[in-house]
Length: 386
Image 1 (cartoon, one colour):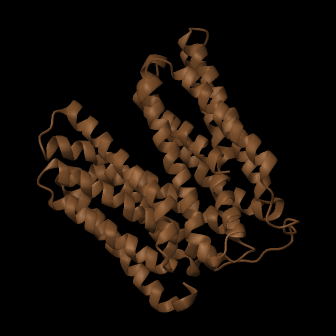
Image 2 (spheres, one colour):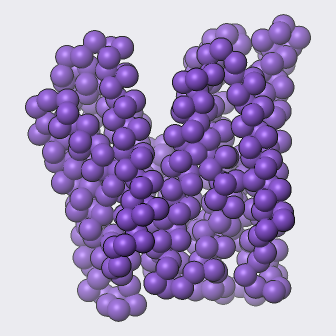
Image 3 (tube, one colour):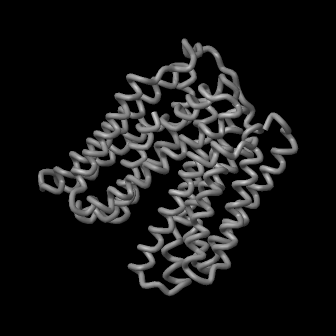
């Protein structure tokens, strides 16, 4: 399952990096390319809670297989359409419409991957293992993003179609592995008539944590190169290259914390959440006050490590609140908060950077301080249950 999730994340990261530039070769405007990428996020927001509910009635395995099938099909279709357009066998309008259709189909089918994976992990882990299990899910996405970016660096400009085909094959391997090896934790899925609800008031604070944590990461992804150019005076090419190295460091630190750190830091999820928020806030304070490039890059690594504690522990808390009958639906609702954070981060980062190069990181300090406050309240209210 982790392999399939990582392969899908690699394919998505490759598209995010390559498509803006490749769109010019395809004859698309920047707005058309942006809408094409944005469509996927919009459809995912709508599909995730629906698939989360389906995982309660049809089982986690069905939703995982549907998602990996959709990821394989969508990636392969986009590779074929792009190849035909580059070869001159499709006109611009037909290629654009076909890509919109493939992207929408892919997002519709893959919307349940993360909710079903989170629910499956919750079904299979004890309370003491929950944060570590959720960390493995986050690490699979992080590793996939690193592989996708590396693929874009290696083959995105020279062989984009071949790279997409290879990524589609990798996702297909994940589909086969899940088909052969994954079974539902329950012998039978819940009856469609079973509807055990969860009051939104019990999870709203966790949704805020998801939104703010993902938003902070999105802000720094968007503005780091701008900060290096405008705040430190680096030439544009050097700023982009250095930002890429810094963000890669953050991704590696996040994945390492999710894979190894959570295995050795044996604290309750609420305390892990507080620790991650405090580490992230200190990292962003260091970024705000940074007077040279190495300090900023170290701060990005610290942020990655902090988020590596924060995000999985928050998922573990959500899982405890949901109970065994609503894991998929709660994960689907959380996916909406995650998607909104991904969308809001770059917008907020761009707006804040106009005020001052250090303004985005200062706002990140405030956001993570809010998360720390929520964690403190969680520790005191839930006690041992947290």
